[in-house]
Image (cartoon, rainbow, N blue to C red; front, top):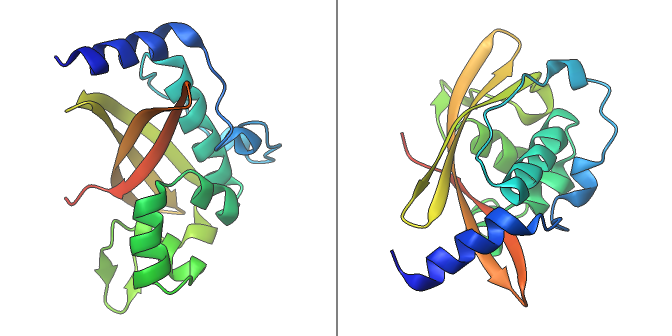
Length: 165
């Protein structure tokens, strides 16, 4: 293991740093908290806080907070260039893992009723986090890559979109 990654993991594991990128989402009051199923911990407190904020923003259908959780390069390429800032289409595509049924995406962001983190693991210095996402009786597996980096001494996390299934 590269010494930089080892140091980064130590910092993440023992720092308990709070993260600003999804912080408002983490503290958001969500009326649908009963739809959040207990999740498997990543074992990294700062990453769990980040993912919890992301999950709460999704269940509250707060698109701007969800977008704030995304990696800036991913967001620029997919949301700005490909989807031309069409937030609804982008988020529907994102949560459907870019899979369509007939002429529409399988998961409609504003209709998401439940989101369960089912697995997380470190792969090549990044995390892969697996969710099951529901809109009523329709469900979709969503595998996301989460980058972790140091920025001016702060640990930052960002989601780099679905992993192709």
